[in-house]
Length: 101
Length: 186
Image 1 (cartoon, rainbow over the protein chains, first blue to last red):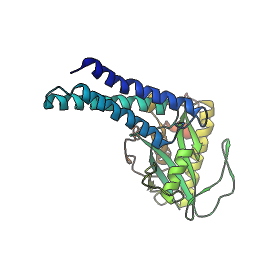
Image 2 (image 1 turned 180 degrees about the horizontal axis):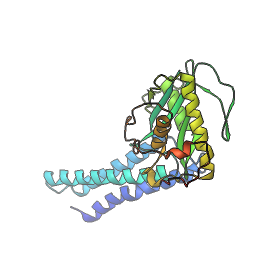
Image 3 (image 1 turned 120 degrees about the horizontal axis):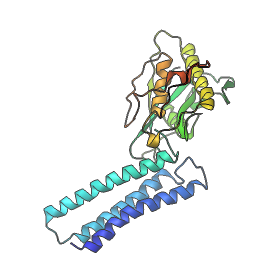
Image 4 (image 1 turned 120 degrees about the vertical axis):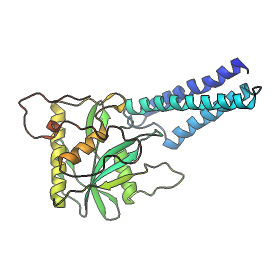
């Protein structure tokens, strides 16, 4: 396992997602503050791209591991990413008044 | 024509449900003064016209007529907007409220009266929107209006509609000055 590559791969997601939110936050002030600032499909597509890119990088950084360990790491990373994504986007969308539960 | 509670997806979120209220009419209504707003029906699709009302996070639990997301969701349901597989939509669910033996116009009048009182009371004594929506929120608001109007509908609609069993204190829907402080929420 290449630790540096692994950490860099994680940072793609953990920093990439807040950057995408900052982009949306900025764009909202161009149009409607109670919207995402961009089409919803673009919003989700952007996150999907960051996710896929990060997961590919994670996979290549653990390429030397045996299969079972590799699967465990990937699944743990996906679960962590999912929790991080849910919390961050929930707080952003609800707290900034884009939409309300 | 009827009273509905609607549930729709949230913009920009993969989870979560927002509830709102739709009152439908066959014919356009004349402009009505409801608290600080002048409201009339909008065409939702086909021959159905309606008034769409929901609570939103505007710092406070603010009630808005025809909020963009609520209106679009209602129009998707009634066919005023066509949904396509390659475009995001609100996946709207609308459930008709059981008003019992109450005539339809009377049921709608009750709902609008409650909303008018809420709007007036909010001006003097606003309910803060709960942090991250975890408290008395728009789902609680929609269900409270229906309950206080005497209607019956399932509170648990599609998706993750948190706080649908919580209620806004009934004093916020009363058109009287209170002699005791209100029960505070959020």
